Image (tube, rainbow, N blue to C red; front, side):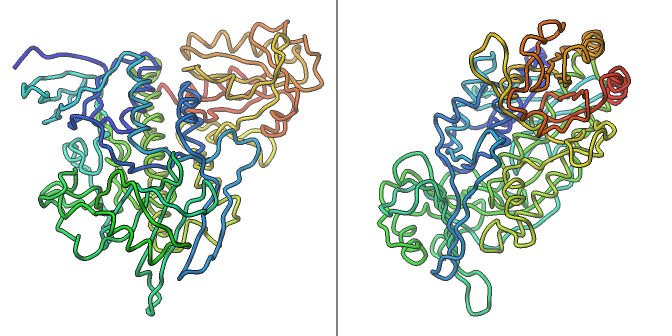
Length: 556
């Protein structure tokens, strides 16, 4: 075996989750290698829904624009039951949310992130397999087999398994992966229709039998292109096959793996007449399908690990949680797993945080995974994602993943300010209407945060005088929290030029939107984490104490 090579982090699996982990690590200046067993991207539009929260994360990276230019908008969902329209859901979010729901085939999502990561100096090592790994107090030793068949030993500080439902990393850690499988098999197909349904609306049509159970289902999600949809439906008996058999050649359940999830190896590949037959039964209006780009058979399970990592090895995405695709939650949840872990790893690798910070990955993200698995299983058995027990606006915010938060978690500081105000652990809301004297146009808070890789302190007050001391104290804290940047936001009534007296960049809340959404109680400071969540909220006079408390949590 050749001499052992080294790098900071090894990531296995170059789907959207592994690519996102690599993107955030490289953005943070961390060295990593990204390997994938597949020789090329799969040409399947598996995960297609992109949630607004994911777009916010990509905005911070500078990646959102390229995705927006390639994707198609999702305006809502048409729900039919036994041939009758039951609901027409328009997915309207509050105006302060910067992005709407979108759809993009997974292979396009992967291409765009892959190009972004390559621009940061990391390319996917295709055809490379993780054979085994061991870890000790100082790092992880992995044995790899490259595309040439040669074996290599790699020494890293950390290992992240983004290698899917049949994860080698998860098995190597011995993590429990409890859950079950849905008995039905499903077909996926990327096809063109000739119907005249409203643009940008998904379609969910179900049929209930005499026993009150769903016995037929059709789900159609718009894709880029005229009248093109990714369609999902139950598989007919003639295409059923045992997982792991020979047939389509697509990746699927591993023999002896026991996890029935994903595209199957077994069974015939669905042909256009198979899909047309279901559409003839369930489509809300007659349509003739054409131009099928691809089709496959897949199965669905629901499982979650008992912990998201052990020592220096972690799992994310489908390696940690699998569930029905209802509401397009899986890929987006995995991407946020990856980003949550990556910035924490970066701080630890820089020596700016202690190992306990990494335990916060499981503490913050596993409850999210548990909630998503439970919710998608419930919704998979009903007519759609709408839950009559919730306010419709709350349902949409949850589906958009804008309600994910970490209040009460190991990194959330003490509450401060009026009831109903954003608190530590909450997503930092975006807002518009921030101005600078030199710019002739207003910007959003996301514009201010874009490209910044470290924590950002936002200091709000009616005028610059109230922030002078806090700004100086925040600058002094850079030695304790590497890369910390401070930005002042002055109230709408502040003099337009008063920010010039500050030692930090100053914006004016010209539209009053920052004050409306953040609800400051007089001068207020907000510490924003690299993943866009509030770490602390405090009075500027208490800047040093608030930072000290947060830094203690980081260094534990």
